Length: 414
Image (cartoon, rainbow, N blue to C red; front, top):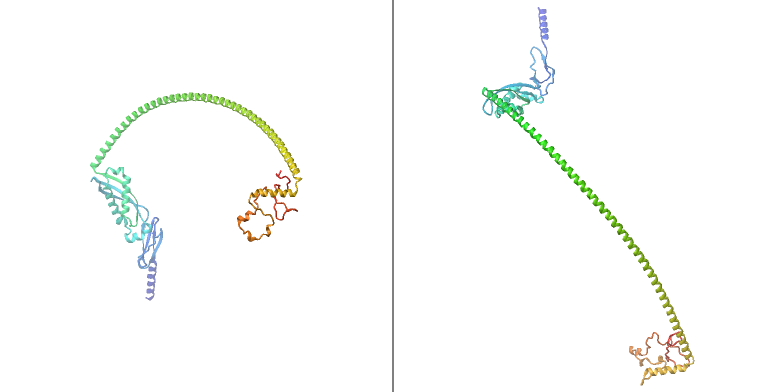
C-alpha cells in the first residue's frame, strides 16, 4: 500500500513537470511592442524591436505577463461621409486617411489612449474635419480643387490630433456621389461647357484665320516697308558718299592751298631772314666802322692830351726854373724883411705885433679862453706855408711865412 502511494505521488509529480513550460510571444516585422509585467513594475517604457520574447514560466498556472503589440507601418482607413455643400446640397463622400503611431511615443499612446487609438481619436476627428471642410466649399469645386480640398482636410485632421501621439500622412478623396438633381445639373453644365468650348473653338478658328490674313497683310506691309527703307537707305548712302567725295575734294583743295600758302610764307620768311642777316652784317660793319672811328678819335684825343700835358709840364718846368733863378740871389735877411713887411700889411695901422718866445710869458696874463687861445693858433691851411726851423740871425720864437710847399722849391707848387 505504501509502495502504491509512493508510485502514485511520483506519477503525479511527473505529470505536473510535463505540464510546465516557458510562455513566449513574437513581435512581427513592422510592429513594436511594450512589455507589461503586472508583478514586476507594470508597463515598460522601452519599445521592443521585432523578435521573440519570453513572458515567464508556467507552473500550475499561466504567467500574467504580456506584450502590447502596435503596428507602426502606415495604415489606411476609409470612411463614408455624408455632409452638405456650401449651397446646402447633400453630398455622399468616401475619403481615406493614412496614419501610423509615433514610435517614440508608444508608451504615452498606450497609457493615454490604448491600442484602439483609431476608433478613439483618429476616426471621430477625421469625420468631423471632413464635414467642416466640405461645408465651406461648393459642389462645383470638388472636381476642380480636389487636391487643395484634400490638403485642407489633412491640415485640419493634423490640427485636431496634435498631441495624440499619432502621425497623419495624407487624406484622399476617393469617391463623390451627388444627388440626382445635382447630377442632372452637372450633366447640363458639362454639355453647356462642351457647347461653349465648341463655339469658342469656332471663334478661335475664325480669329486664327483673321490673324493669318492680318499677318499676311502685315508681312506684305513689312516687306514693302523694308523695300522702301532699303531704297531710302541706299539713297542716303549714295548722298552720303557724294557728300563725302565732295568733302574730300574740298579738303584736298584746302590742303593744297594751305600747302602753297605755307610754302609762300616759308619763302617770305626765308627772304626776311636773309634781309635781316644782311642788315645784321651791315649793322656789324657800321658798328665796326664806328668803333674804329671812335678808337681813332680817342687815340687822337689821347695824343693831343699827351701833347698838351707835355707842353704844360715843359712850361711848369720852365717857370720853376725861372723861379729858382729869381730866388737864387735872395739872402735870409731879405726874406725876413719881406716877412716883416707882410706882417705890417697884415696887421694894418694902429696894431702892435710882438715877436718872441711866448713860452716865458706868465700864464695869468693870458687866461685860457678859447677865443683867445684860438687867436694865437695858426689856421689850418691844406696848402698853406710851412714853418721852417729857426736859422741863425732870426729872433728866437719868430715865425716866418713861406709860400713854398714842403719838399718843393717852386713857390707855386709846380
